Length: 143
Image 1 (cartoon, rainbow, N blue to C red):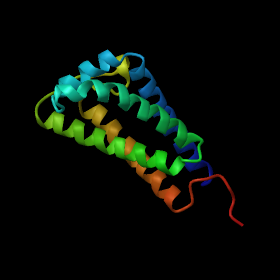
Image 2 (spheres, rainbow, N blue to C red):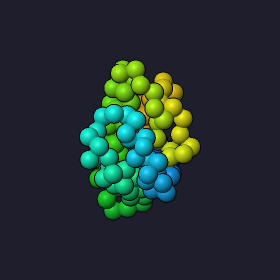
Image 3 (cartoon, one colour):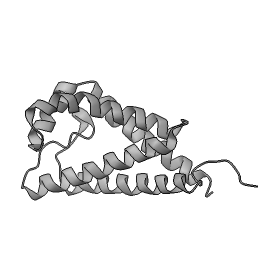
């Protein structure tokens, strides 16, 4: 059972980021409007972030599931998750509640529920990265 937990976790985490990135790639203009509503980035950076961030999510999500760069992909997903927790926390602390933007047009408003999802995602990605760094993140048996 212990061998399947990391694999299942990577499958879930990777699929989550593939879905999130895919929905944003489909409509970068809508995602750019969400980024503007957070009021954290200079306007000149918004188009680049709106186009590049979803692709980072897609590629890292796919490589976390099955790829020779799984360790790097999990590091990227952990960093993205940490960034999302910080951005969400700062935004809520400033009294703002924009659309979350997590899942493109399927997103709800930023709030305690969406922030809890981000914290859970951070915990999962950090745990998987730790296992990977310790060499325990694969289904291969050790003899």
